[in-house]
Amino acid sequence: MAALEERIEVELWQPAFWRQHPGFASLSPVAERVCNWSEWPPAPAYYDALSAGEPDTLPVRFVGAEPRAYEDHIADTGEVPTRYGCWHDLLNALIWHCYPRAKVALNRLHRAAKVVVGGEGVIGDPFVGNHGAGHRGRRRDAATLFDENGAVIWSADAQLLELIRRMDWPTLFLQHRHAFGTRLHIALFGHGLLEKMRQPYVGLTAHAMLLHTQKADTPQSDSSLTALDVDALNS
Image 1: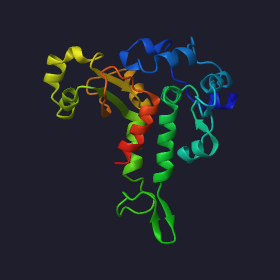
Image 2: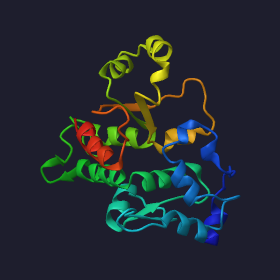
Image 3: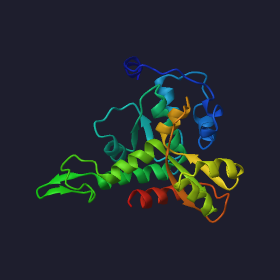
Image 4: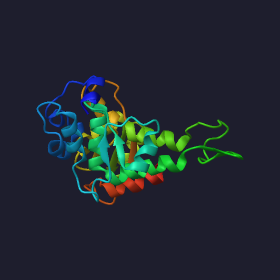
C-alpha cells in the first residue's frame, strides 16, 4: 500500500466536510461514522475503514486495485477499485454505504446491458442501434449519469413535481419555497455531484429522478431506490 500512496497525488483533506453544505445530508451519518478523520489515514487503515460493515449491509470491499474493466471487477470479486486520497472515490464509497442495494442494482444493470460481440453480430443491449461493437448503449449511459450525477426528488404533491418537469422555477422557488423539506424532498445520489458540492457554483445541475409518493415525508430508502434504478433506467 505504501507504493500506492507514492504513486497517487493525494488531494487535500477537509475535516467534517459533511457539515459544510446541506447537499451532504443524505450521507452525513455515514460520513461521520466512517471517515471522521483529521487527515487522510494511511492507506491500509483507509481501506479498512471504508470496508467496515456487515456483509448483509455492505456487500463489497474497497481496494486499491486498478482493473481495466471496472464494473466487471466489482461483479466478479465484490471489490470496488478505489483510489487512495481521492475525493471522487471516497464519496462513491460513502454512497455504497448509504445505498448498497441500489449500487448493486446499477452494477447488475451495467453487466446485463454490456454489448458483447458474438458470431452473429452485436448481442446485449437492444438500444445500441447501429453503432456496432464497443458502443455502451442507452441503458449504460443512463446508469452512469445517475450513478455520477443523480438526485432523487420525491413528494406526495404531484403539482410540485410537475413544476420541476416544466422547469417553472419562479413558481417553485418563490410561491412554494416552504415546501422544501416538508412536502418536497431531495437526496443527492451521484458521487460526482457530491464532489461538486464541496465547491458549489452557479449552474451546478443534477440529473433528477422524480417520485410521486403516498406520504409527504416518505424517506427515500435504499430499497425504493433499487426499484427506481432498475425500472427508470431500463425505460
